[in-house]
Image (cartoon, rainbow, N blue to C red; front, side, top):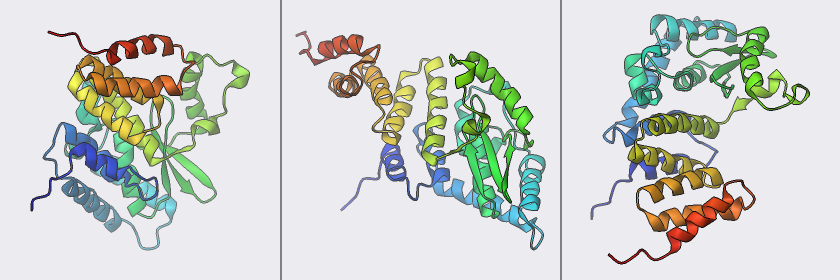
Length: 283
């Protein structure tokens, strides 16, 4: 008897089904399988493990966290040359870990995922930081934390972070006295939050390119990752409707309006739902 292999979406859904034990590196690497269905995920993971082994070989016996962190930055940014991709920053490859490993170029969040894995295998306590506009990483050193830019490995002081945050604060609608403090923006991101941000980056890439099928593939992953998020169900429903999948679109839009009855777009979506639920006209 032959068993059907899981689709890339089914495999991703399995990887992210539970928060406990969620393997960020594997789940992040799997995002490329919609465009690269033959991608060997285990080979990608093995490649990262090999980099981690090479990093550990560079650590002096008994090296403490500061020395380990400096060795990680030297290895990742200096020796291996990982950096951003300013010449083609909107390419999907900047989010695909296997391509980032090949080209040594990627978005900050993709570089951060690799840094987090290498740091963990080097004995460091690191976390991702969903900073506005630019994903960061931080590392616990004694009783404090060091915040790094994953594009460069640069250590960011509180003053530098406040400068970056000022741009976001100017664009927010909150009164100055209600703006959260810097510490609020430096909270550790969960693996699920990191994956959502990576997928939303890809969502914008495909939306800008008006690539409906690839956008729908990303949107399906977002719903698998965040099944109770009404906005992601709404967005999938609208894409399904645009692609002619009326019944599936109606289910998603019904979910949204039932959860967000008072949302500004709820009225328009109820009308859209009513149209979708009508029998199609006879040809």
